[in-house]
Image 1 (cartoon, rainbow, N blue to C red):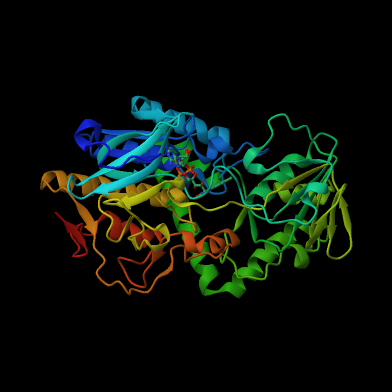
Image 2 (cartoon, protein in one colour):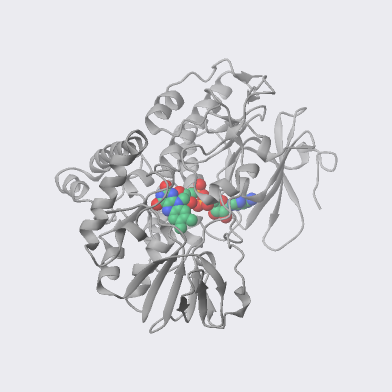
Length: 494
Ligand SMILES: Cc1cc2nc3c(=O)[nH]c(=O)nc-3n(C[C@H](O)[C@H](O)[C@H](O)COP(=O)(O)OP(=O)(O)OC[C@H]3O[C@@H](n4cnc5c(N)ncnc54)[C@H](O)[C@@H]3O)c2cc1C
């Protein structure tokens, strides 16, 4: 059952200035920004689960860690001091918990509060939000002036699982990375990890110590790059200056390095391909056929580059505790999988690390004066808001750099916008899209991974020009988002 504004007048429901949906790294960051820069806003954070952390609390597979460095994946305003900056999930959760404590966010959080629908009521210039608590089906409502979605970008209920012929025939255990069985004992077992993305690259070395053998089966290779899990330059910064300075310096350095790697990959793909191959070859020598297993068909950074901290994946491939196979699955069998080449791989446990299933706005629906909004038709505005949707922002981080770099910028922009609206007693800020025929391009344009392609229809779109184009570039965004005029001629204030 869903209520609408006819069922309950807005005056009778709880009134907030701002509602943040989601208590992952983005929602917590947004709340900190509100505390620091817009302290007059009366806000709450609604989180559907029973704890903070989002991604870093959901995934529990062995070795779960960040793929980017914590100087850029962490917040601009809170130094990372945990040491290893390619960080395990528990260290990230400690950092987030510390942020909640330091910024006194605990009383803003409402756990097990799941937002179902948000309806913009033009007559009131407010959002009327339907939500449920815990397992109850009773739909409650609240009203807010500004709605901020920090719901991440994928379906929490299930990951992506391709259709495998004979999937149910397999007699061993199947462990999905998104729902890792807490009591899974893989010691002395033969493990088959299907996939070649960040999850597979993390799982293989983590399980290889304990398992009898781990095979990584990939349909096609991925570019990988190695670096120390603890950045020696950042370590040096920490040893000679306060943590806050060290964090800032390491952040500046890492933003530059990741930008350089990405732009170089785009401008000189052949050189970058040769460089990445050379690095892997140096690590693996003749132990593995690099040209078969680490030679993707696409150009570097057409899909996300996978991080191999401290050469962990290479070590287990060299010592034989893990191996890599590049082939297609014909079908699952009772004892493992049969490959198209005819080879059988035997396994006690199969881990389909086959990716995420994308979902925008955490599955909630949206309407304007009761008329449903089709998320796939939304037109991105500056990578933060959407054409003709008032007082609404959705945090969507970078896919070609650390997510949080963009979520920090978005939070900063929202505070500026809220302060501007308060100062001038404005009720409504709407990025106004007048050209109904504006060309619609996929919103995530910088990479073309399978999971992004699969979800193009259900994701918002971007236009060919600013402000409708998603720049996906921290340096450019830094200036246009942080310092660009709010009243840019497209944003209409009422
Ligand atoms: C295994 C893994 C590793 C990753 N590593 C990196 C990395 O190293 N670097 C990087 O940049 N990115 C990485 N990413 C991407 C990563 O998800 C983001 O960078 C970041 O964690 C997203 O944070 P978020 O707060 O925006 O979303 P999430 O972490 O997804 O949190 C969203 C929160 O919103 C809540 N929510 C959703 N819908 C609702 C609703 N309707 N009502 C109430 N609450 C709701 C969820 O319960 C969740 O707590 C990784 C992703 C995965 C899956």
